[in-house]
Amino acid sequence: MSTYLARRLATILPTLLFVTILIFSLQQLLPGDPAKVLAGEEQDPAVIAYLQKKMHLDQPLPVRYVYWLGGVLTGDLGESLRMQKPVTALIAEKLPVTIELALIAIVIALAIGIPAGIVSAVYKNRWPDYLANAVALWGLSTPNFWLGIMLILFFSVQLGWLPASGYVSPFEDLRANLAAMIMPAFVLGNAIAAVLMRHTRSAMLQVMSSDYVRTARAKGLNERVVVLKHALRNALTPVVTLGALELGTLLSGAVLTEQVFTIPGFGKLIVDAVFNRDYAVVQGVVLFTATAYIALNLLADLAYFLINPRLRG
Image 1 (tube, helix red, strand yellow):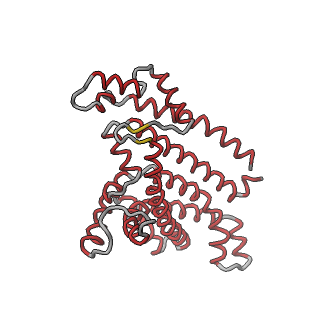
Image 2 (cartoon, rainbow, N blue to C red):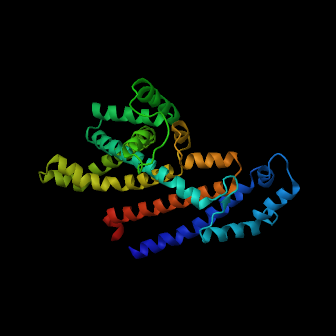
Image 3 (cartoon, rainbow, N blue to C red):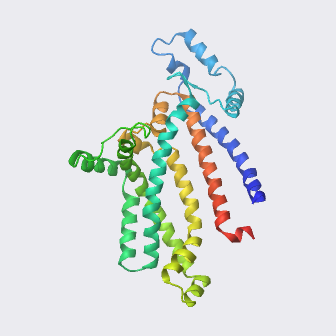
């Protein structure tokens, strides 16, 4: 286990270094001078010079990268010049919202996708299989923003059961928080459930044709025990990896869904930062989400290692 972890870390560290270079380099390709944008309409040369010096824009590109990377390694992602707050503080403020939304969405996706995939595999080429595939196709082809608007029209406007938009902290009112989060979480979980269903079905069909499953059936074991105990455990290994990657995607901020439901998460933060040319915020958020994605990928690999005994041999 320790050897496997060391090998994975040895590949992750160069990847993270490359990610920092990529994020910093692509940021420089954006047109315009952020100092001039932040200086306002008056474009005072003294103010522009001050901002350029403060953001190290008067230095060569490699020097600016070293300054930025040094700050990253010490936990300093810079300061938002628009909001006059450290980027780390902004991330800490928005992160709980996005984590909550992502966790509820992934729970909904797992609760729908895995059982649907199992049923579809067990009843292959019968009506439950056709129904599950039709629902999965609907989930994959439905745009999130359209589904969000339809849910708002039905549950908020017509029935008045749920709030149309906004966010309430769970520490203030847990019931109001869940009421505000359930629709955007379902919108995000719906598409992921379709992907999980297809992968679970494919993995289950492959596993259920294996020799050890046929042996379990030959021993007279109950079909439910064969499916859930023997087949499902081995079929879940690719699904675990996929679920972790989808969670990483959710943590990067579901921009359209957060905009539709006015959820103050990472999506809204990065959209506002791009429009305001708040480069420090854009770099900090993208770096954080990329790191989280890589970390979740590592956790998925470790889970795969623990679930699959053949890797430990």
